[in-house]
Image (cartoon, rainbow, N blue to C red):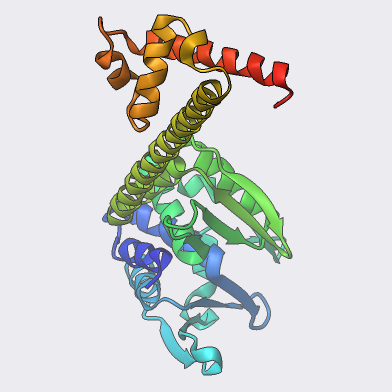
Length: 319
């Protein structure tokens, strides 16, 4: 089961206690996954479709609690590519479809004409709890969230530009940074920051999904930090190894061409130690000297030897 499906299943179990929040959640679900069909003069039917059984149960329950109706439910099996079942709920005009659409502020009757309201019904979501319920319903209706192991991305897909703008503004009332992009004939309201997705899951009430996402984020952060440290240590080790090889080659060059007699006593002593203890660190070489010399002192002497070797190579044409 995908992370998005688990999140929806968790949210679908939330049925608000207050009637105002129930209506707000239902209003969002109808807007996001419902269609309106004309059924005669000033009569319409509502059809709500979903592929999630838990979401279908939630819609059924909210319709019963808010309007006292038992919705006709059809299950259609899509045999192509072994896809999931499709759950279709139909509310006929005789069952009160007109009243439902008017109550959730989708249908407006003026001068004996129907007007469809596409935006967010702000008059239904004046309180914070109702706004949270509306966002929950919008996600259940046409939302998704990517597997955080792969990417951070949460989105709502709507066919109405007006509704997408309102939905973006509603999300951003909670100090989030939702944006909109057009995808073919749809408008996608999305978040791509892990922190903001966590906040929105918290607002909607998906606490288990939130904890799972946070655990994955922490794991990825630790893994990235470890990789960064390993890469840094590997780079430092490579520099140390390369420097050691260069030092040994220069010391051997001096020994074969002029001999250590040209080196001052302090440089000759460290050169002999470097040849005998090729795997030793600078600190270990410094401790072998009498008196002991610090790491920076050893490095300073070896750099002097490098310069002497370079001058000899230039003089002999071995560069």
